[in-house]
Image (tube, rainbow, N blue to C red; front, top):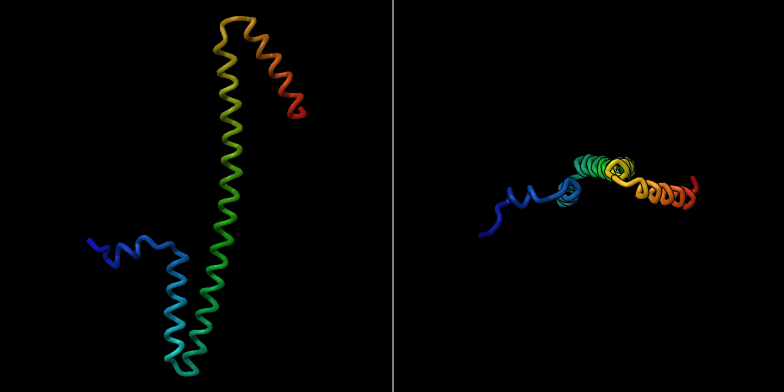
Length: 110
């Protein structure tokens, strides 16, 4: 069963829609007079600027999310470490964990 035009359109990313708009403007430019062509060129420029801005914003957002995820992962590891320590039932195990903590501190330069 072939996909409908609406389904195909829904699968496109915003950048794809902008590219389609630019292609439509190019086609209209070919058929337009000078005055309309100038306005089409102006619209093309604005779409290109918006596309670049969206791309930069997307990259910045991705960078921010990666940093947040790294921080969350570090927080989760720290909490898991606390649980591991609290779960110990033998004093010897706590001593071994203490030694591991000392070694790890030296490795990370703390």
